[in-house]
Amino acid sequence: MLHDKKLDEIVCRKLNLHCREAKLEEWNRLCRTIGEAKKEVKIAIVGKYIELHDAYLSVVEALNHGGYENLAKIKLEWVDSEFLTEADMAEKLKGAAGILVPGGFGERGIEGMIAAARYAREKKIPYFGICLGMQVAVMEFARHVAGMEDADSREFSQTSKHLVIDLMPDQKGNIPKGGTMRLGAYPCEILNGSRLKEIYGQSRIKERHRHRYEVNNEFREELERAGLVFSGLSPDGRLVEAIELKEHPFFIAVQYHPEFKSRPNHAHPIFREFVKACLLSSHKQS
Image (cartoon, rainbow, N blue to C red):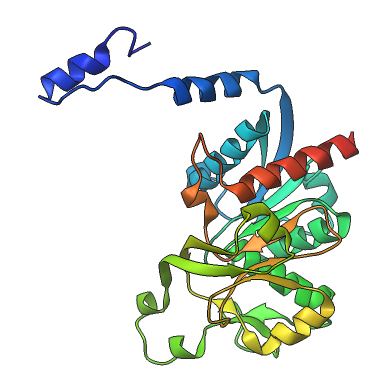
């Protein structure tokens, strides 16, 4: 409408900018796609900052992008992990076709996130973990599948014998806290035959990070024997970038933040496939 009234030309003229002919074909196509979406799928975001929805704005928008490419509208269920327990899990997640646990820092609400990851794993509900959402998935698997009952992260515990999430050796010592963060884009090698490889369609990717703790390599072999798949690693093999489970409709968690590379006209492939799996889950539930 603004273009039809030539308001873009007026703005450019006032700013002494050259106004090129607008190419709106792709944008118009996207608008038509959004308008044609008839399906609806309910996805639960289980996090600790849900009182301020904008804290997860990039994740929400990436979910919407995934919805566009599946001709579906996303209906969000906001679940506060601080008050989520295994006892009321079924009630609070009732009707959710998928569970997403996003990033965050600090101990508050962690047990609720772990319970949500367990619920998704055991009930075969599509699960997508991002950053902290991957770490709690590893902790949950270690506790309830690999037999490490006290599995934890050094961020939350100093006494656990199974710190499956920890600082790397070169992060320890007298280093300012900000200096231990892994920030920016890093490459990742994807495991052949994995669901992640199927989703990306390539063997090496580059994704953006913002975190401090990593999967502890001391426990990788034991976790792998129990069935956890490390489907993404740093090129040198030292850092776990992604995990997944076999024999599950969709259980993928990544250490990086794929939402930062998603666009309205080009959904990030993990979000696209997560929404697709949620739609299938929703259809089975009905």
